[in-house]
Image (tube, rainbow, N blue to C red; front, top):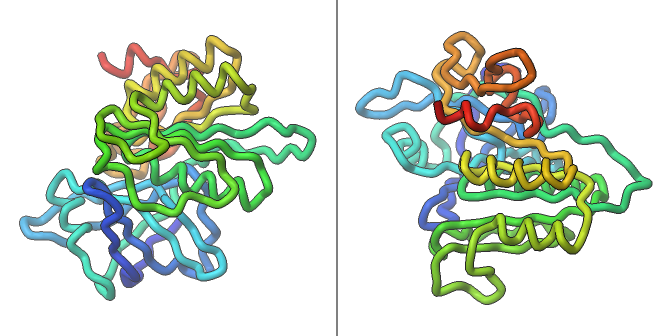
Length: 267
């Protein structure tokens, strides 16, 4: 991890809700892993004093380029979405523990990636990473409205299914929740494990579904972060293994779903 300054390469609106920022990755900095995040400084008016965390949504090792997806929902994220190519990004990273990947050439079962909303970004990166290692990947993604479905090229080789809660729908998109897709898949096939990112309610229900079926599940918790270095405890996640709380920025952001105290998350 270190702080670096790089020019923005492209800023691309990929849906009504999301903008993808792509930028160079320093050649002497270790390759990021899926589930890790970057802390971006924001130069805006009025001033934004705290940095903002964003999970990596892609990495191209051949070009040494990385990407994040930004949902403009406040002064900081809106300022980032207004940046133009050539303007400088102030980045600290990569930070955090990634999804726990263990290559197993003898296990043909797929790794199932389940995402909702902004969780699409980090799972795009995860799918790309796994496919580069010749792993079977199933990508299940859910959205509230059709306009939120991003115009992305999903990683070639992954089995992809989309769900949306409102009609009218593009062809092939399931009307309903992404959890419908997950439950249907679990009824037909046995996954090796599940990686997920999305709204807390979705994560809770998916974690319960996996635990009831004995499926290992890792959750990427995109908590609000004040400092992103472990000092402020603003991103603390309650756990049930005797440790009380773990910080998403230093002990996460990826956690074993079985240790998260889901009820305590809302109290």
